[in-house]
Length: 420
Ligand SMILES: Cc1cc2nc3c(=O)[nH]c(=O)nc-3n(C[C@H](O)[C@H](O)[C@H](O)COP(=O)(O)OP(=O)(O)OC[C@H]3O[C@@H](n4cnc5c(N)ncnc54)[C@H](O)[C@@H]3O)c2cc1C
Image (tube, rainbow, N blue to C red; front, side, top):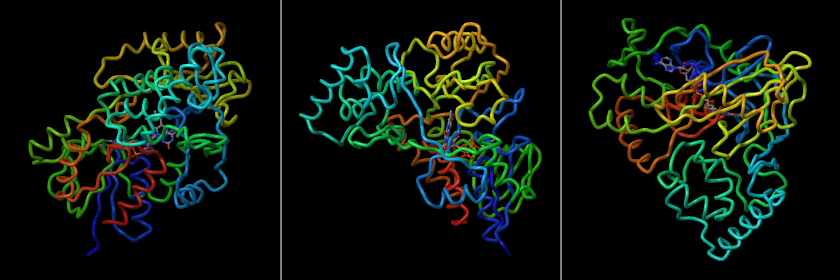
């Protein structure tokens, strides 16, 4: 008899697992708690504006990832050259800060950054950093750290960076030694011409929808049975591929030992509140996105959907997203925060006082960024050992509990499908 595989969650990693299982002629059933698939890569249509869970842009590291996405989206995929800026001490300069700070009119900041770089060049230490803070200062110098890297990352991760590992986020920060014309992993990116980032999940869904149970929230895993919506269940699974956020998955495993539950409780994350806005004025900004390190400004990043595709908004309008990091478990005063975001958009010159907001959407992403605290690997080892014993493969950004992107989700799904 053919093996039966349960897939938990219909974001890109679950959908990719489903697609690759089908391709290999394997049997599966996918459980998705929402009435639609796509997870964080979904898109929404609000008042003729197409919004995402903040800009979800595709960056390919592998030939397979690019070929797979191209096979799903065919001619609905377009390449873009990144236009990004940084806002520091009231000035805009091109991204990344660490190679463009000399463009600041504030020459005191630029001189401090130069001094910091000269100091690390004398020390010549390029590895062995124990914390994220040490890594930032040790690879970019005290000036760049003080004027951008520390405040920006403290704002994003809502953490003391001396209590974080130099893992995860560090891999996404442009290497100052690259000596390139354009820096970082995202110098160019791909995005669907139509349908927002959600077009990708929709295209995969077409290949596997007959094996998806929608509105089926997994509420327990007992032996070979997947329980959903509390009192329903499907039995007889040989393996489980889960994309449910790890701290939640562990709670669903009947009989999980205390040590595993304790380790899962210690996993840390930050949430993100996003405000999507449609504005009644065309061409409000030239950037794809802008980074903000100033702790007095609510958002850490603002991006512009309308600069990626004109089809994402009606004529003579623009659209943007503002992202605000929220500390794990912090109570959110949504109304106050939205007011502050709008004020800050004016303060930073992105919006004009009399701009008209013609579409608005608020989104909350509970598990947005995994925090690599000093006990991260210790806790993950306890959980992973137990999952292996239960034959559960936990994948995707929140299932594997790491810092990964959409392409990684697709590749995770393939690897999991190949391994069962
Ligand atoms: C603010 C932000 C910006 C980002 N920008 C980018 C970007 O520009 N480019 C990029 O490549 N990546 C980006 N990412 C990362 C990207 O969103 C993820 O890598 C990817 O979407 C992860 O897909 P996934 O399927 O693993 O998880 P998810 O998309 O979270 O999917 C998990 C699915 O499981 C379902 N689920 C959860 N619990 C249950 C349950 N109990 N029962 C049944 N179903 C359940 C959910 O409803 C969801 O559909 C960004 C992430 C964030 C937070």
